[in-house]
Structure formats: structure tokens, C-alpha cells
Length: 167
Image (cartoon, rainbow, N blue to C red):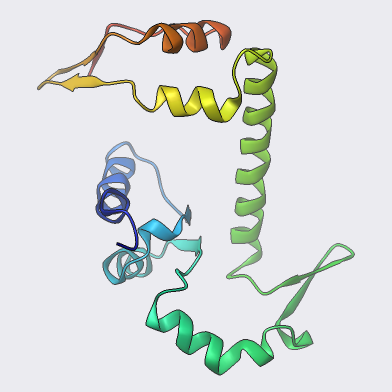
């Protein structure tokens, strides 16, 4: 089945949570799993610029390729950025946000890699940490006992894991 049900249904909740915390969302970089008509409509209605990969299995993708593939590399769709030519983006601010996000992700990746000191790969450590479980209650989140590997990864990263978090 194309897409991930969790991805598709998570976007609205995430945007509401950000708004609740006073975060103004101006740009979203979303993977193809979030692409559905409801999510894209919500981004447009909220005035949020976004960048995503349109899944190749979508009828819209096939129509766009059929109708516009021959025009994609025309000079009129190019944008100069410094001395480099880039293809058109929604706005220069959106593009700068995209670059900043990638720059920050690269810094985090390199810092994680250095901290893990060859004991684990960054991908392996993050994959292990995705299995950290929590129990949610009205006013508290309890962190379920991390595995031995999780504890070691947290230690290598210099992070302390609390037993609970107030909400």
C-alpha cells in the first residue's frame, strides 16, 4: 500500500501541536508519505510553503510528467542563486529554509557520528532509539525502561533520559 497511514494522519496533529506551543509554521519539508489531498489542502489553507516528493504512483504525477516533462529544463524555469543555476522554487525564503534545514541536519549527523565513536552507526543508533516506548497519562509521560543499547547510545551522546516528563 502506498504511503504510511501514520505519516498521513500525523501532519494535522503536528501542526496543531506547534500552534499550541506558539510556533508559527511557515515552511514544511515533508516526505512522500505525508502526501495526500487533505494534507496538501491543509498546508495551502494555512499558508504554509512546503517541499515534498510527489509519489510516482499518483495520477497527478503521471499527468504532470506527460504534460510538462519536455519543459522542465527550460531556462525560464531556472533561478540564479549566487553563480549557480537552480530550478524554480516557491520563494527564496522557502529555499533558504530548505538549505538551513539540511545544513542543521548535517551538523547533527556529524556530531552524532563523532560522539558514537564508531561503536554504532548514526542510522543504527537512531533506528534503535525509535523503539523507545513511553506511557502517556493525563499530566505525565513515563519513559518505559530503555534497552541496554539505548542506554549506551544515550550515554555516548551525553544525554540523560528522564524517568518521566510533566505535560
